[in-house]
Length: 337
Image: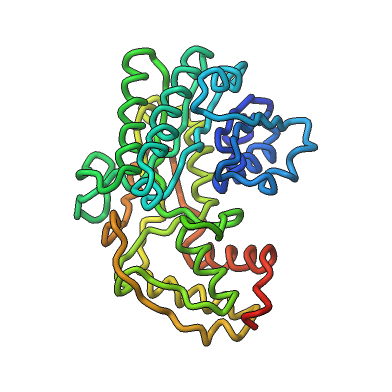
């Protein structure tokens, strides 16, 4: 951990969605820095097992509640200095199937948290933005101040978050930083459910000797980002003393892209270390998915310049660590062996 992160010791920090994939990793990092962590989660997508190891810590408090309830948001912000806002309903397909709930959580819930943060005098509001904000822009790499039109209800909600955060700074003086996450993966990411992200979903399918289905011909590419890099960005956003870094949005990525065929082959290679049968599993193809963009690649120059960001974990190292985690925490279905 960087030296500047040590000043978070004793600070009261709220992590919304703290039982989720990214949120629980943030809770762990903050507890390791001796911060006082408040976790707010309604467990719609978060998992109790993600935070189970923290429950006995005197520095950890769990508040079970929903950001769609303003009173809950006010309660969670009492005495808090910093907020890491991770609570949201992710997934482009989910938002296409149910745009109303995505909007209620991602827009109304976000606004509730901004109001509660303002009223509580929170020093800084760090929030999970999304690379989906780039929409139909074909320019590569993606640069923060050049976006296109959104391609899904989810993308609209995450762009609205940026607009609200900006207005709350200009109108009420609430400092914020938005982090546009690019295809985050890693430990504690749920591989199950209809809206599972591609890496954990493929990993479990391969472990079960089931053929993963790639949407399209496999040439679509993404800037896959291991969760440790995301943790680093959040900690940098909390601790930066650069006034010019505030009230900005930053790409949170590695700055390199990998296509889905390459990704599947790498996963097969790493998971074969635990089961040689994985290497024989066939990769299949299906139709392109609605709302998907062909390619995504982030410029991380702004984050490096303003925040001192330096991603420590590249795709291969991250996939290897993720493969170890999934092998340790998930037992393959015996019927497929």
